[in-house]
Image (cartoon, rainbow, N blue to C red):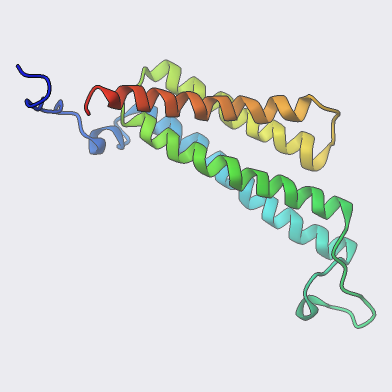
Length: 165
């Protein structure tokens, strides 16, 4: 076989096989992704409820009472917003890499543990960032765990795909 000109046929497993409920890795991903999506949706709701509770509105049409002023900087609300933005910046790439990682047919035990650990780390990150501020390095460690997992999955997918190009 000439390595540059011959093409090796892919195995019968395709992305549709990997991305099905018959695949325990995909099921694990679906569960933990659902947990993270619910967490992110709760962050939106919590930010909105805090705005109402502290009567901090940033849009004129949101003013419920005539004697309330528009305010932009409430430390508690801004902390929740930053935590939510951090979720959007980090969980979305994590989801993307996790799906690509699943398509490489990873070891189920390793993959499921990565998903569990990454998700729990993001929950801890939210708790120590938005709700119960804790001194560093606690928030950094919680952030960095999921960051490293995402990086590991990206590296693993890249190395696996080098065999095919």
